[in-house]
Length: 287
Ligand code: GLU
View 1 (cartoon, helix red, strand yellow):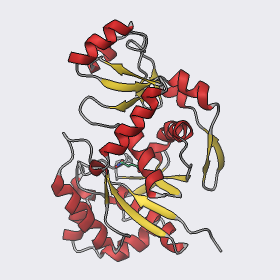
View 2 (view 1 turned 90 degrees about the vertical axis):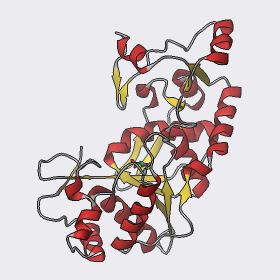
View 3 (view 1 turned 180 degrees about the vertical axis):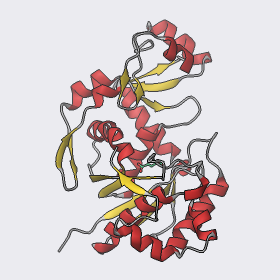
């Protein structure tokens, strides 16, 4: 018998869910249910400037309309800030993180900033500040906390994860540079929060869009650093609109609310998506 899976869907309440989210939720829900396992919802609501409570309710209503049910209450990232802070403290004690005072403009202005899989790679300006300057600035300047990636990788060595149906993939966290673990405006970055949550929730299979595959380089490293289990991963194809571009939250036409308002039957749509059948004009593409 197939191993019981625990899967999850983790919307950020920063806009309305669209067909791409529905596809992801349907795949994760289906995988959990097919094995007699469990399916959880996590609300990624730590981005205080962009998260809105109305989108939490709207997202849950959309999932219910699709006929997707979930186990227990949705997990809220905003309720787990203590766990994120504790993990950051563990890394701080091991001298693997440092405060960074740079602004976005400072980083953009740095001629040496090359690009990695998830944007500009931090040039390391604050990595080796003299202790006295660091202490002085820590007391009064806004700062984020960055992982010293070279040091972290030196501790963990090479890591890999199993991509379902594709075998082992080697993680390349070094390509991301010194990523942010705790932001100036949010108590944890997506990378830290998501990695800790998946472990705390007991997620066995992370099923999410291929746009997040590069993040798994970093998540795998954080698992190794923090002694967390490694789930299996499936990074699925992305739903693209009639223009061939992947859907964005601002595109109202593909929002689940507008499909519902147009009289589409939710469970029928969910069954179609589970079979990779998309409404006319939409397609699945691997980036
Ligand atoms: N909250 C993330 C998003 O909406 C997804 C996180 C994940 O699946 O790891 O893009």
